[in-house]
Image (cartoon, rainbow, N blue to C red; front, side, top):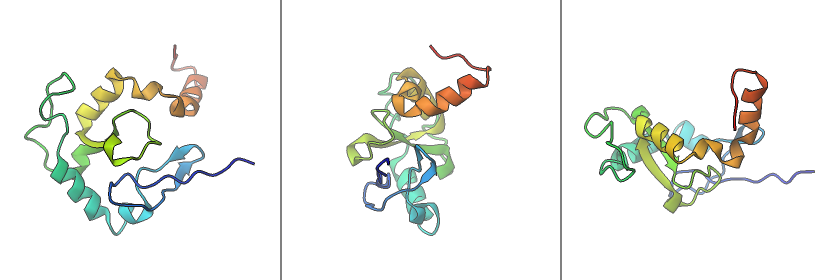
Length: 129
C-alpha cells in the first residue's frame, strides 16, 4: 500500500497540510486559505507583486504596473517542483510571466507531471518528446 505524503500549504507562514485534486495532483494551499482565509493569500500575492519586476528572468515583465487584482498573480515554485513548498522556493509571478518561466525553464516537463502528459498523449492530439 502506498504511503500518503501530506504536503504543507504554499503560504510561507502556514503549516497546514493540503489535499489532492485527484491522486498525484496536490492542491497549492490548504482548505483554510482556499475559503475563509483567502484574503490572506490575496494580500500576500498583492504585497509581493511580480518577482520578475526587475526582468531578472531575461524578459520584460508584462505586468509591472497593471496588477489590479490578485487573480493576475500566480504562485511559482522556483525549481519547478510543486512538491517543494519551502519558503525559499516559492515566489509570486504575474500570470504571463509565470507561463513564460514555466515554458522557458521546462517546469512542465518535470517528472511530477508525467501522469498529466500521458493522459494528454493518449488523446492523440499532442506529442511529447
